[in-house]
Image (cartoon, rainbow, N blue to C red; front, top):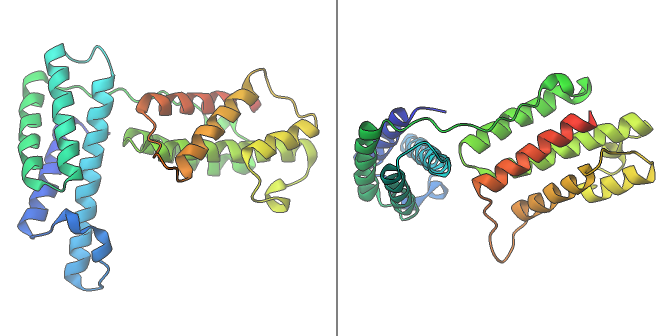
Amino acid sequence: MADMKTLIEKCEAAVAHLKTNGISPAEGLAKKESLSFKAKKDAYLLNAYSSAITELIGHLGILKNQSGFLAADASNNVQEIEQEISKAYQQHNLGLLQKELVKLKSLAGLHDLPQPKEIEFSLSARNLPEPVRAEMQADIDELKRCFSHACYRSAIILCGRLLETALHRKYFEATNNDLLEKSPGIGLGNLIAKMAERNIQFPPGITNQIHLINQVRISSVHKKQDAFNPTRIQTEAIMLFTADILEKIF
């Protein structure tokens, strides 16, 4: 994760490029489908802007939730600025964004804002079966990136994917039957039931953890009347449960 000064400067540059080129983020990428050089350039600048601001908001969100980093006044200022930056981003207000980035830069200079601690997701590829090791390690690496950029729904979806890969492999090792080939759309709940039918045992509590992760994953994937937006703490808990499950079943 980049340091605060670098993140702020990247955001300032991204906003400045949009203003210099007369690009409104309100137009969105959907209107940049033309193959012209200008359209491609606009799409690139919009992507860079969105990525930079989203990363900064995620960084501030992690920082404000980690106690002991800042004095109370600095912590309150970080929270206020994060809220204003989020509002300006949602409202496509580049002028307000620039003002808040200047405030944040000044605050960072005064308080030397620290680097947020990242989650200790210590699962080692060495613990995973060789046939699925590379695939699962790629998912673990992407999961860490999603979490560090505050893409919490994506992180939870990847936790579900890791469990599916692991349980399919566990079932295959126990039965020599490949459910991915015979029942490719089988969900985690049905997969657990299949394993119970074959008397494939798990350590105590593991089945309940898997069902919990599956329910949160379903809420993250499927459209509901009320959108589900997991918090950082909820996502961290799901990630730690996932690591615990994978370590125990292998």
